[in-house]
Length: 100
Image: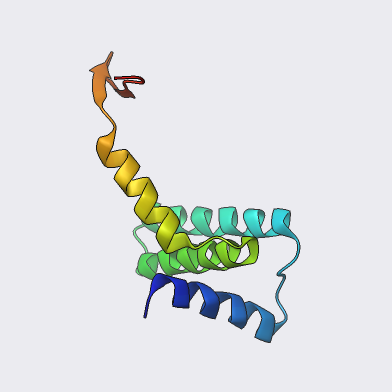
């Protein structure tokens, strides 16, 4: 199954279950909450970290579908852009060298 199909499935599940698909601000807050839950699972070394990471991905996929973005295409383009970036360690911080 492609990422686009997963994105459509995540959205359709929200619709089928009566979850929000119109309040974008709420979706961002819910996504943030899922990231926090994943962090807590990691921090506390809980067994459900994988499930929490899946929740993050599901919320992100649903949000991308609501907003009309093909997340697979966006990720591919962003990864290609990141591969072309040049970084230099400055004062212990990996810093992007703009215009280089």
